[in-house]
Each structure stands twice: as C-alpha cells, then as structure tokens.
Amino acid sequence: MPVTKKLKATQKWMIVFTAVLLAAVIVARIFFGEVGFYWALGSVQVLMAGIHLLVLLRTWNPVYLITVLFYVSLASVFLPPLAGHPWRLFFAVAGAILLILHTIVLISKQINWRYREILELAARPVESAADGFTSRPYPSGSAEFTGEDARGLAHFLLRYVVAYPVFEGDRVVLVIPRYMWSYLIFFKRNYDNETYIAFTDSGEVSVRIARPDYQAYKEELTFDQLCASLGDLFKQFMGMYRKGETKAIIERLNAV
Image (tube, rainbow, N blue to C red; front, side):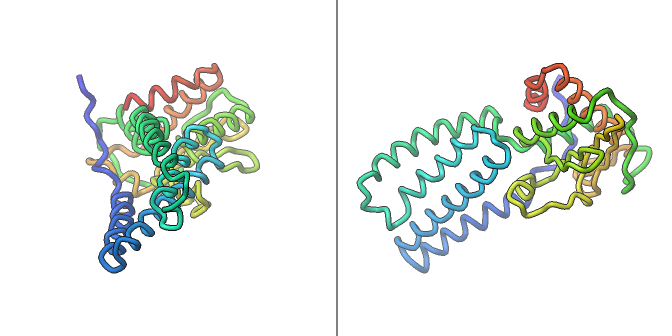
C-alpha cells in the first residue's frame, strides 16, 4: 500500500531560481543577439560549475566531480571566446558523456538534497493533530553514543548532504535546512531559524522544528509527536552509523 505524502508541493524558491536563470538567457538573446545568448548561457554554466565545486569541496563527495565537469564542459562549448578552440569538439563529446553520467547520478539520488525525505519520514508515525507549533526545542531523551560517534555521523551526513553539521563545545548540531546549498556556499551560518537535531556529549538528544518546516505539511500535526519522531529517526541513524550500516541510512532516505 503506497504511503501518503504529508508535505505540500515542491519548494518555490528553486523554481524561482531556475526561472530567473532562464529569463536572463532569453533577455540576453532578445537584446544582445546570438553572441549575447551564448555569453549568458555559458555564464550560467560557469555559475553552476562554481556552486557545485564549492559543494564538492565542502562535502568531499566525489560524485559532485561529475556535475562540476559536466557544467565546465558546457561552458567550454558555449562561451564565445572558446568558439574557435581546437578542443571544442572534445568538450562537446565530453559534455554528452557527462550528461549521461549526470542523469544517472540524479536518477539514483546520489546528489539529492534530503530535506523533504527527512520531514516525510518524521511525519509518518504522526496521525493526530492535538496541538500546534511551538518554538521551543523538544527534549528527545538520550541515546547510546560518544562525542566521536556524533562527529562521525555529522561528517557522514554532510558528505551525502543529509544535514549540515555545526560543531559546538559540548554538542553537535545537525541542521536540516530547506536550502542546503545556502550553507554549503557560505550564504548562511546561523541555524536559529532552522530545523535541527542536537547530540550532546552527555548523550542527550534535542530537536527543534522551525515554523516554516512545520507549515510545509498539508495538515496540522501534533507537534510534540512530530518532534519526538524526528528525534527517533536520527537516533536510528546514529545506531546504524555505530554498527557500520551507513548504507542503510541512504537506502531509507531513497525509499521515501
């Protein structure tokens, strides 16, 4: 029996971002002709290559190298100064091959942001709507782990862009931002208005769900139950990590 999705439709800002880039290319074609079109199209590829290069350097996940090289090859084909380059055909062929690899990577969810999957998994056990949102962090009890375990899990989750870790004196905070790229490319550092799960050195776990993330659900859910479920989910991730079953974490997210 299929599981009913509890989140609303896709994120609007990513649609807006894509629309702005597309509009810039169209405007360049209208006002600056064919040369302007290729300048704009090539510049978009450079921008995307730069963003993914930063993600690669932040996560050290080699899969992002495919995406970086894909956008670099496209930029090498479209930018006017390289129009007569003797390697242009090589860049075009490389771009076609990298497009296939990039598509495989996308379909297999190897570079997928995990925000929606996490919120969906947290909501699955919650059926009632007894109370609404509160801004306070929710104590999610304790779990068996060490500070080294918490840091190791944090690095693993960053590598697969599941959560953005913030390392503090006595705890590791795993931030679940709506727009992970804003942290990876240094646009944001503060997590006060984000959903997060915190693992303290004393073994305690706490959860905070941000108001926009709570409002992302189609219906109002019992807030304490939702927080407890999110905390339990990451306790399970911790247990999988400690057992060396990190692949199971990604498989569970991919199954959503």
